[in-house]
Length: 453
Image 1: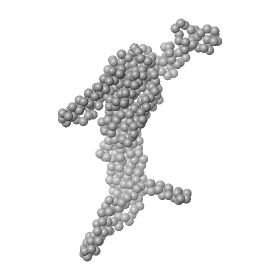
Image 2: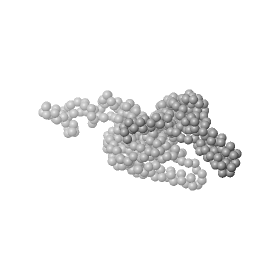
Image 3: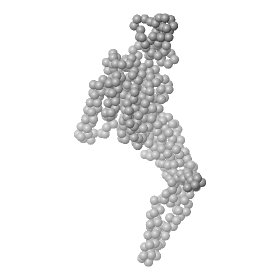
């Protein structure tokens, strides 16, 4: 095929995509069968009245096929706000223009994280007449994440016509749904005065990275602190004194194992809200905060502090929420990440995945301090309709308690996050249980953060 023919074919395909996909109206085959069937019957039987019965059907089919050109649809979708919080109601509108008189069916597919309020249960309209038209709608953002409402699909035909045009008129508008805020009043209580991390240095001196001064060697100083250049120049040993690191390192370990049912998505949403609350409190205390999500989707954010860390962490959480809304997403291959040695691991899980529990215990055996916030999802179970359902609920709760006991025996304190109380009481319970971790374990920063709990 020549290059000119290739260009002509590509141009034709692009024009066809802009017009949409053409197909026949479902009534057209029925009309043709009725009309030609009546003619065949009239010829076979010799009764002219049967032909008169089929003539209107053929006439309607011929009239409906006269005008087969598209109606020239144009349109767009706009939202009143593109960044909302879980549970907020968002208003939007659809603007459509077309040429002439036509019958138009409008459909905005939406997603699982969005609930249509007006119209309901789906965002769909059937219009007849001339454009332009404005279609207002209202929806509620149910779950956090980066979501889109789907492309605006329109099916159109001329009034009385039997040629349908289906096309995508406008790209999908995006909606950023932020986790609902959860306030923590007793998350952090520093055990000793601390300086703000950043451009202000700590007044404490010890093991760290920021230079403080040079002084002569004293018995008990570490050999690794010797300043070899200064010692060689002065002819006696001198050591480098540094400002100690007063910033703790916290790693949120999020269990991103979820199924296709709505309850599983709500369980993950509760874990994300708790993670966002814990991260916000630690970032306000100038700690470095990172995120590791494992399950159907993975996310890895190295611990860091400051305002930039807050937004990066929020972006990672929104990406996890978007993956929860994608039913066709394949789980990636799991690989254990290399964590900072001084990190305190805060796991957020509903204990539905044994692999997540094994990974958490692996990090604990590697010497990391770890705690677990267990998200209570018992209220998301189906209602009991008999003794069998009651027994199944008791078995499910017993399995969850067995997993908690398994974590406790492995050295990971746990606390249950009730849906009605939030994460605050669970943090208070963990603070009492973290006293066993103050005395030992690798990582000075991990011990300091554990002390604040």
